[in-house]
Each structure stands twice: as C-alpha cells, then as structure tokens.
Image (cartoon, rainbow, N blue to C red; front, side):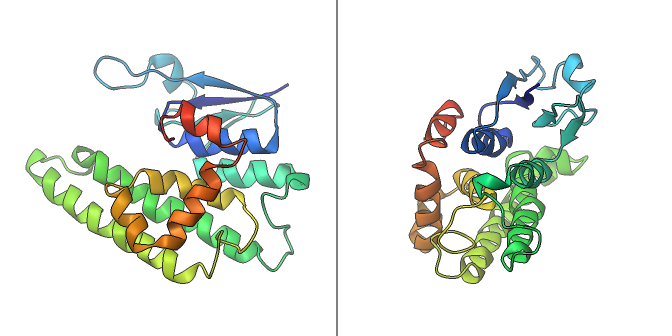
Length: 209
C-alpha cells in the first residue's frame, strides 16, 4: 500500500508532498477542492473533521493530520534518506525545536495574516489582526535567522525535513523579497531547497517556483 496525501496547491501539503518525493516513497496526491463558499467538500470533512489541508492516509489506513507531525513521522520512518537526525543524535533536539517552532509560530501566524476574519467575530478587527500578524511573522523569521547558525541549512551542511518546511513558509511571506534582503541566510536555505531535483517539480505543481 502507498501513502495518500490530501492536498491543495499552495497549501501546507506542499512540504509534505516534497518530503515524500525526496524520500522516494510511493504515494498518491489527492486534490481537495473548495466549494463555492470556500469550504471543504463533505467527503473530505469525513476524513478530517477540521476540514484542514493536508491530511495523510497511512499505508495501514490510518489518518494523520498536522503537517509538522507528518514531516517528523515520514522522516523517522525512512531513516536511510537522512532527512532527520536519529533519536540519539546530537542534532535531534534542534531539529525538533525548529520543526515545532515553525509550525507553532510562522505557520500559525500565516493563517492570521491571510485569514484574519477567522480570528474574530467582528469583521472590523480583520485589518488589525492582519497588521499584527505581518509584524509577528517578521519577528518569527528574525529569530530563526539569528539562532540557526551559519547554515546553509537549519542543522548545518545537510538538508533535513525541517528545511523543506521552513522553505515552504518563507514562500508564504507577505514580503518575500524584503525577507530575503534582510536575511541572506534564509534566502540561501530557500534556494537550496527549491533547487533540489526532487523538490523542484513539487514546488512547480504548487505554484511556488
């Protein structure tokens, strides 16, 4: 059996799809369309009650949600690809730190940036929510740049699943050119991920390169 990734172009499924490609894991990509009102179709809500993309159907039939959890699980399940430090490796702590940091800060902040109406019952609040999210996203990436070391990747000279996740989030910035001008290290990380032979076609499919 193969993995089935429930995806939408440009959504958080892009990083998971890219990792599946890098791992050379057999998988299907099932696009989840939006209804006319922007909601997910009923068949997908039966798979993921929160109607969020992505979801991952495992070979045993189980369903995973939460993109960062998928990245951790897939990389750990295919250790020969070297996309995650081993459980006892010195770099393991920082690997987990950055994946969870990116999911809990930058990813969550992007949702406030692009869907501010979801975060208040009063539409008047949307512009202020969006403005604060933009400032928070810049701060989140400033911290990443300051703490990541010399690079070119988050863990040094070898790409990991965390780098794919980070690169996806960089592409969602509301000022990508400004982000990369301020932080050449982040630009170098992004370009190294985006130019990877297995990642590049996934990025293109998702309208990211």
